[in-house]
Image (cartoon, rainbow, N blue to C red; front, top):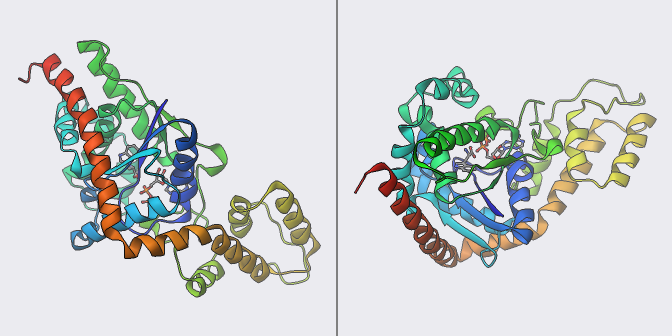
Length: 320
Ligand code: ADP
Ligand code: TRP
C-alpha cells in the first residue's frame, strides 16, 4: 500500500498537525510504503512572508525527522525538488471545473478570514491532486479539513481516467475520527491561521503559559468541573491512556482541584511526549547538511518515479 502526505511549511508545527497528520504518517511507515514530503509550493498560496520560506522548509523537514519520519523506511523529499508536479498541475487543470474549486471550504474560509484571494489559493487543490496522483498514492492520512481536497482529487482522476484509460490510482483519505479535529486554546479547530495553536517544540515556560491560556469555564474551586466539552480535558485525552483518562474524570468530578491543576498536567504530558523528539531536533538543527542530504536522496528517488509517470501521461494527452 502506498501512503502519501505532507504539511506545508507555513509556520511552526502544532499539536493538531501532529495528531491529525504526522503521527498517522509515522505509524503508516511501519507497514506501508510511506511517501512524505514538504509541500513548499503550496506555501505560495497563503499570506506567509516568503523571506522565511527557505528556513521554514528546512525546519519543517527537521521537525518531520525528529517526530519519527524515518528516511530508511520512507521516501522523504521537498515538493519543489521534483518539477514534474507543476507540469501535472497544469495538465490536471484541464479536468478541474471552476465550479468544483469554487465549492472548496478551505478556499472560502480563508477568503472569509481576509487572506487575499489569489489564483494560487484558488487552484491549491489542483496542485494537491498532482502531488497525490503523480505518485499513485492509495492512502492519504490527513485531518478532517482536507477530506474535501481528497474528494476533488478523486473527481479529477476519474475525469481523466474516463477520457484516457486507467492512468491514475484513486486515493482514499485516512482520517482517524478522534483525532480529526484537535481543538486550539480557544476551543475552535487548532490552526496556524487562527492563532490558537500549541506548538510542538515550545520551550517549557512558554508552553506552560500557553496551556494556562486555554479557555475554560468559571467553575469555582471546590465544585465539580464538567469535563465534557472542556478544552483542557480534550487535549489531555490525546496524551493519556484509557486508564489515565478514567482517573482524570474522577478528579474532575471530585471538585478538589481547579483548572490550573489540569493545565499543569497537560504541560507535563506535552513536554514528556515530545522529549525524545526535542533531543533529535536539537541534533538536526546542528547538522542541517545531513538533513539536506536525506532530502536530496529522497528527491532523486521521487524524481525517478515522477518522470516515468509523466511519460505515460504526456503520451496519453498528446504532449510530445
Ligand atoms: P493549519 O490549519 O494550522 O494551517 P494545515 O492546514 O497546514 O494546518 O494542516 C496540515 C495537516 O495537519 C493537515 O493534514 C491537517 O488536516 C492537519 N491538521 C491541522 N490542524 C489540525 C487539527 N486541529 N486537528 C487535526 N488535524 C489537523
Ligand atoms: N494541503 C495540505 C495541508 O494543508 C498539504 C498538502 C499538499 C498535502 N499536498 C498534499 C497533504 C498531498 C496530503 C497530500 O497541509
